[in-house]
Length: 332
Image (cartoon, rainbow, N blue to C red):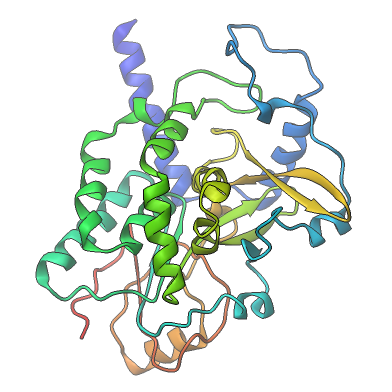
């Protein structure tokens, strides 16, 4: 029996990595969001349940498509935008100039990105990025990459000391095959008020940190302005953590993450999941990146995107990686 459990754990890890690299169809994700809401009205499955039911398991308030389009985060109106809107994205463009770094999904292959960042720092050629974006496993790396080489060791430890047991429990929940409470705990331990303070300070300098999730109700990508959220201090701490958890939550395997919003005088919860569902290709689809490619500028290929098409700067440079990409050779 013990051998069977070990084998099952390895199989689960392989499946999770495969799903992050090849996310399920968006239609399936939208259907999952509807099933999640319906599950609240069904009887509990057989088996032991958590002693204290979290707030996220409460039945959601109803809302309309118009409410969803107008929804904002209470107290943080600039916290996010629809990821398919160039007009909205233009509002988030950085004041600082410089290269952009996009870190995509890839499950355990995110260790490749961690290695690139460490080696890049040791080479003495790693720049300060004007923008850092992350999705899925890339979202969990992005805050530390944003703060620079002094956090390389944190990233290294995350990929050398954290195992499957630190990410999920092999226990079904009402709406998922596995329980992600261990990952939620890790995020809570690492995303501290002090970390948010540092990110807020860089945001004030004009740099930007973006993370992508998928709004499972709308079936649309959402880009989160993490620096603006961090700037709200304790008020933004829970939201910051929830966004990171949502961006790496594979529908069906992990529960969607409810995020409170308000619109038209009422509050309700959206369901957010893995950002790669709506960000499956080309990390920075900008006119700048296309020009850079035509001119042969240095960049790597990516498996995921975090931001919509726009032109941040005529002199921008973009590096994208994690799993199966080629590291940038040098930045000057």
